[in-house]
Length: 198
Image (spheres, rainbow, N blue to C red):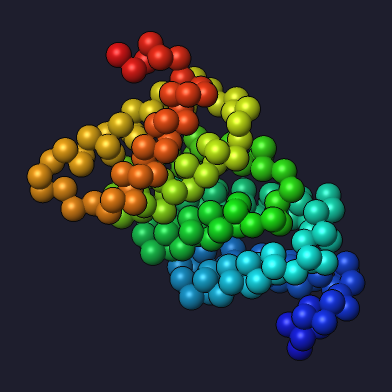
């Protein structure tokens, strides 16, 4: 029923508010209960919404932008406590897709996620999705104002990821190398003083 109403473009702001609020609650519940299928289903709904011009225009209001920001901040806060690799990967994938969608009109606030994401690089099982998200975050915030310590940590961990590929026994995905090189290039060109390279 909800999908048919959305599809014919007769949705009100109040209806969208209730509907989107339910999706966000379900997404958060999926992340807390390690329900990968629920996370994926909610992600598909949000991305489907991003293809509707009317919904995108409504989502650009300050109210819905605050909801999106609260949703992303809530998901990031769950990473520290989550021990389920599948859940973390699902949430990282969802966040990347959302950031690439037109639903967020201002992505500046997302730079604050980077320090919280850096420690996750210790978990090789989430490296690919995590590096993809980090690469997108750096690209979407050209005036990054991170603490120097965070940039140094990110630089160091990304270099370690790249160095792993020198081992003949390395079985990591080439996508990991690609994302790591994107991050390294972005840091060197825009943020990090070159004296830290040596």
